[in-house]
Image (spheres, rainbow, N blue to C red):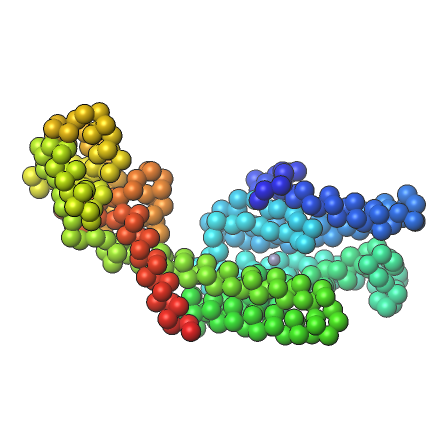
Length: 360
Ligand SMILES: [Zn+2]
């Protein structure tokens, strides 16, 4: 996240703070300014304590996710709360449920512990006497934690409750459908918030917008992930394509390229695949005046190959890692297809068009 910098590293996870967080601290200091030094200090301690709770909340998500082998890039603390950026959410519904619910549990445990302490020390104040700036510090922290737990339990993305709901639905139906239903419930709730907000609570309108957009994004992301995830290379690979012989001149590849429907050419030595000549390599050879030279010495041979049973998202990952635009698909040593960035992109467009057809 831009405008944020690292302040610590806990269990190997970088903890970052967004620059606007300091605006919040400044704001709190100004609000308490008329109370003098001790008042300002109390206000700041309160905010820092809340952020510590938010950090524990995000930390709990991260540590449970990591148990399931998911990488956590970092945790960023923003004035509106925290974000743990994970490389992905678990696909297994039970795991997603645990990763999501643990944050809420953390807030409830904190609130419960404070409540027991207050009871034990006999210092409970009536909640009505509390406000954001007034009342016992511990008790205010307790109330905020209850509020955080309740807020996150709302069954709407991007709150934890939205994921909890999806994971429960996903145990009975497929992931994309579960996401869409969860997103629609979330959006319905956002509309309700918005309506209530119109009756005089602008803060609710803000939350409504936040929830509505979050739900939309989550649904789109799930669609995309599933478009890539549950499809094998066999289903999207190009099966009709030209190949070059290792002795063919570069000009031959150029002819095929100009014919228009192919940019990357597998190069064969009789029945054996020895590499893929990409458009970039082809153009480079031409620029060096090698048009008549055979493609054999030009083509890169140390390339990866895909299996038809590989998943498309993994295939894309490898294309990206090896910085290729195309990769051959090989089965039992025989070339049977070709995956290119272009045809994967087209597949995604088709998939999206189909999903749009289904949802409206
Ligand atoms: Zn959470």
